[in-house]
Image (cartoon, rainbow over the protein chains, first blue to last red):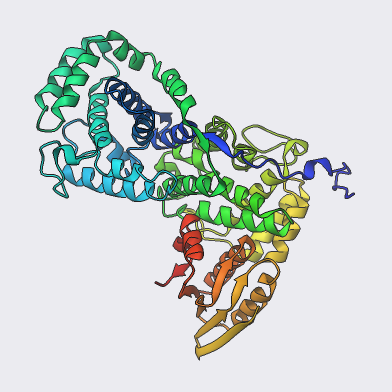
Length: 415
Length: 103
């Protein structure tokens, strides 16, 4: 039995944490991914979830088979995965003005990303065609019924959602929105789907569900039917997409998630944990900065020290990482490993101010990996520290009882 | 694990590890890498044509070596990756953005 510096027995806390379950709801995984997409500049907008709800209603009226309906709603949740930055996000919201180039590029990029989800082979195609006009000059000449039905539905749902103005009473907008959509029937939209929408638009409840965010509960109920087997490799492919979304925000962070995941998995291995445990920690590493998507780019790329206010904004990120992941049932300790990487053993970390006795080994590994990776990367306000200097700084943190001594000794052995 | 070392010139060296790179032998690989590191090669090429698989420990050591080389202004290049498993792994964890992988 080893003793830590402050004398407490640390046998119990040497537990890595729990592996994810083999069964999860796809809906929950995809809703977290969609929240990541909808985050930006201080707030979470619900565009993706709202489009998914509208698609669910249209799919229901079409009496789609359960499997087809699930594919449709899951694809709708991540339809904008190919949009790279906030500026284009705002552009894509502007109905009927979205330029062809942006439509084409984000559909192609989005489908390339979603192709990585090999356990959901049909989604990439749906994303690929979701801006194809029914009778338009589309980028690969695919038209009308050659466009996958789910893509046609998402195209329509996406444009309906974009027409809704948040500041105007929603029932006062129904007529205007219906008129605009009808005007594009046969040119932009499948006329059969526009007919379905016209029926749907008559139901006040459809609009009110959007107004009072009831769609969250409706998606939750639908999601109960998406429970399925998910293995670590499936989960890792999803985490890989999330890491890509986070890292593409800035050249300074473009390799950060990858580095943290790689270092953390190595330390987990070298500490003697199993292959599965290493993989689960690596997945947590890919997820760890999920909440960074809430931090505006101006702050991430700022040259110079952050003001107190800016630092407060940054410090929210691990809160979002944890809460978004914790909404997914069955992830084991992944939300903790990912979300507690700024917690410190002496309780001075953020945002949960957890004490060492409640930080499992996975969280401790992630904390050390994040510090090491961050120090050895360039930042807008400083260049990378050498490995030797980084280890020195980490040593000091250990002496202040902020980081785990065993994890650090394994790191030192590796460098 | 055996590794063949071929000096191309005073700035360039090719290392060809063979078999699996895992916890049991990644220390050996680390030593080979350190050896070439001390000889100040600007470009270190890892030829992966004989490498079947690599574990988390091996991947971590590669990343650490890349950081070390970069400190001295050198680069690490991995070439001839034959195994699909390794290719997918690099892509999945985005290590192909950190370490140059030649097609």
